[in-house]
Length: 238
Length: 238
DNA sequence: TATAAAGGTGAATCCGCAC
DNA sequence: AGTGCGGATTCACCTTTAT
Image (cartoon, rainbow over all chains, first blue to last red; front, side, top):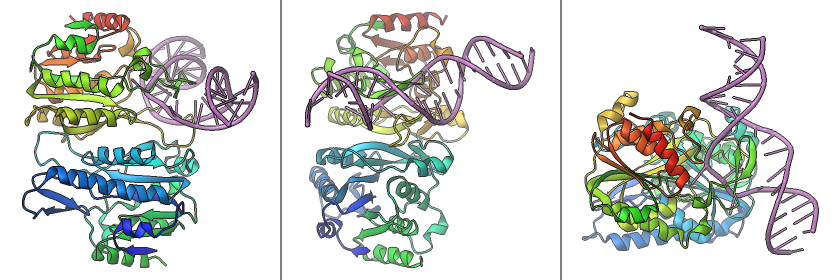
């Protein structure tokens, strides 16, 4: 099921402890030099003076609110994955801890083809964080499925290339995640017929892979054009 | 110069803005009932009294206090590297931000030979974080030196094996860092004759490599036996 | 002297049972 | 029922010993 709308509003309509697995790729809200990122897109802030502090409090409140809904929706054995960079991962972790999530692993998605440096004064950014956390004391983990990927115990650094062009045939999204990444996440932490939720669906990779792997899925996207993109992509699966 | 004593006390005696580079491997506070693998056997995580939470009134205040001294000692162009795991990295980052440090990169030290899982309910821990942060607006970075390591722009995921036995000939320390790791850090962020400080010297890798690379060095270690170990190691260099 | 085999090691909040 | 203690098996790589 795909929803068009604000993720918090839509999640409020869903039942307590009805979800097995959540993947979330939230906006990062960078606030550098009057620029902000919304749905992964850099936009100028046109509200006159940029109030960093207000922005900071609002973005953290937003983070708290959607994570709180995720917590309510998750089953006791459920878990959540949240992607980020060093710009937002610390704020996200703090809100998660407040709510009661317990970290399982922090996965490093190591991109095999990172972009070059613009300014030569630091190291190339070649990875993203993905926090994996649980609600209850016991979570589901498919050790066998992960073992079989490389025929050894899976570690927490994953070398996966950035999105391939072939995965973008249904339209463009700025922070589209690779199918291989979602495959691994869904296989690691859900079973067939489990319910998978993505509150920031974007291009739809989460639901696309969930459907392929015979999971039930709920995707929420605020922007019409991305909602339509995800819908087209879903419909390409029989 | 090596000092035996509490790092905060010793740092108080040093001059403002006298240091170019700091590497710090503080307690991670995980010697509290966790389990680890040692010599193929399950054992309690016990790195020593220095790593136990119960030996500190308030671990976050302790973190704040030593970082605050580091900030005072750093030159405007100086930078600091702090290692950690997900157990402490979020607390460290928060205190660093409070003090005014600005993150440059968060390096992932990816170990090529991580220990296996004891419990098959999560991913193998195969890396440590190293936060790299600066004091002022401009920091020193040796782009060329980093480029030359792999003949391409250096990225922020570093594949470096755990400590080799040959590096342990002067004595044992439970959290010794590999020489290759410190080499890269010192080459990336200091010049010859710069002053390098390590407030938690341990086995002495930081000063050992600093000396080899013709940097001046200050190392502080609280425990007599590790202070002596580091001293023996330093004296092995002509 | 090579090469093979055997032995050693590592910054993880787990689970079951006894008391 | 809460607390405390001990356990059986895993991986990649290095080092030492045996052939």
